[in-house]
Length: 103
Image (cartoon, rainbow, N blue to C red):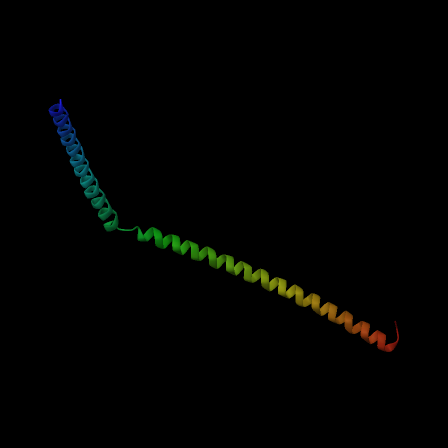
């Protein structure tokens, strides 16, 4: 009986070593394949033409938006100047009237 147990344990250990060795071999194969795929990806040419077109599109859109905002700001500044001028004229008229004693 002790001999049978010893033999069974040896068989189990041998099977375990075989499974571990197979797992190591499979892991090596996976790593080799992954490394090859990584190298393929890294060596692949990037679609620079598409990237440059997208960059140009983004720059163009940004320039258009900036121009639009500048024009809107100029219009608003013009309206504010006109409004300030009207208020200034009204204030001067009130002061002059006050000095004259009209009010």
